[in-house]
Image (cartoon, rainbow, N blue to C red):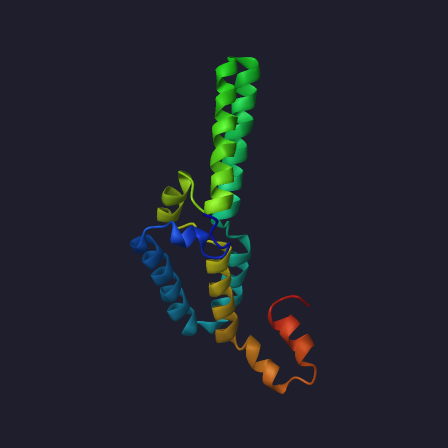
Length: 149
């Protein structure tokens, strides 16, 4: 079964882990609602936050590369490691699950959608979208509000 891109990781994550990740986001938003001057710093942090996809890709490529190096230099049986890793990476691409996902989610790694939800909530708190109501050029104002201009 192929899951939708936006929901595939949360669908394969334990409900209590999803709840904790969402609650932590809500707690941060409550904090920033009272500390509007700190929102820009948090937005910069969000720009640097690694989502779960990037983390899985980095881990998979590291393991695959290590398996190739060990397979070429020590023992050909190490070449099984890149084969297994790429199979898991394919499984993740199709289903949104692979063995590292539960561990990474418990560690707090979020999807890009979850990160963007916090980003746009912070922008709304800061008032970025209020400019849309007054803008002459609504298209340009929308592009500016979401960071495309």
